[in-house]
Length: 258
Image (cartoon, rainbow, N blue to C red; front, top):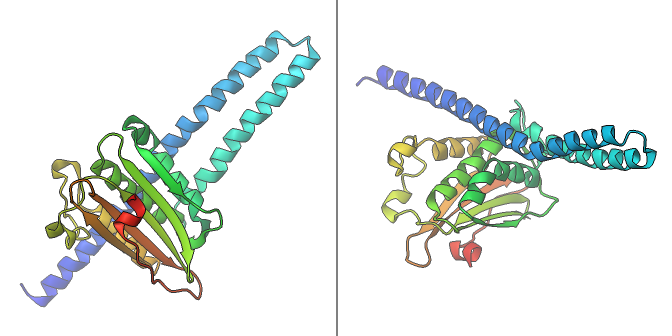
């Protein structure tokens, strides 16, 4: 194959990969929107009931005022959910300062029903003051991809650990599970496009796209895994620079899963 043909194939692969990334990002936003509707269904139902009760007690000013106060509480719940979630479903063209805590919570909301159905033990260590300039849609996609992989690897009642830290001018997001782990012979290929161990359940693109997105943010994504009986699991670490920062940090899988 000539050099021109090779360059042409690489260019087409690049365009295809970017198209798949955008499609995956839209799908992630769609899943978040569905979970948002699931979250607001209860307060909306409460508002409907309060409106009905108000109509029954329309001649009792004290009861009407009480129902109005309760309705305000439910409206505040809906507003808070919407404000903390909708921005993450819209991919911005430029990175902007975002609370990674809210971003991680939004990604967890996407998978909330799976977490509940599998009775997953979720351990969160998310300090409130962790902010980084990111493309919200892209980074939401990355975190959601890692959570998907963790949930796929976990048996019922397994554990997922999500931790955020800001150290030495860099932000580190850790997502770990105590699932079956990744065999050593596969560790070098997990970020390779189209590599998958999920047979017909995966495209093999999520980690390759995640690595590309993190790289666009001048960050790194690394993996550690163990298949040892009783100590199996996988840890992914995303490191993102903040202005004037750098990226050194090491942590063992056992540190997260102990």
